[in-house]
Figure (cartoon, rainbow, N blue to C red):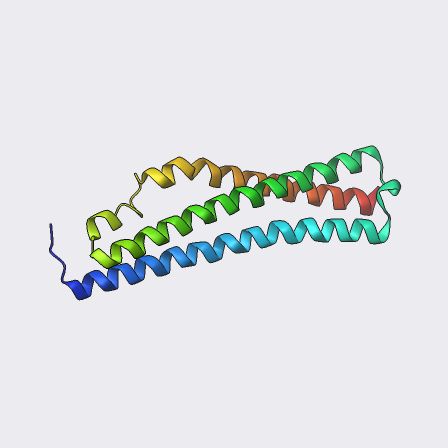
Length: 144
């Protein structure tokens, strides 16, 4: 194993913390997308036709799409919490310059990411399905 100098260790930790911050920013974009689409749907629905002007199929599509996008936002928020915990751990290891422990953050077998990996998959899947339902709902409003 290669021994790193303290200056190199500090640079390693800085890059690791930047990478975690970047992941948090991307996750926040997904959350904003989910919540923005929910808000846009409700705003356009309440300002244009209202719920009474919709058929039962359209109401089910709207409710299902909003529910799936909300679930996606919740799971992405859980993932963002994990990223914040890992960032805090990296900062703690920066004080001791413990590179060996810090390397466990981004290794494929990381227990924390393995434990929450299904959360990211569920969030992505529900976002995709919610978006497809939203498109289908919009299609039914325009053409039916």
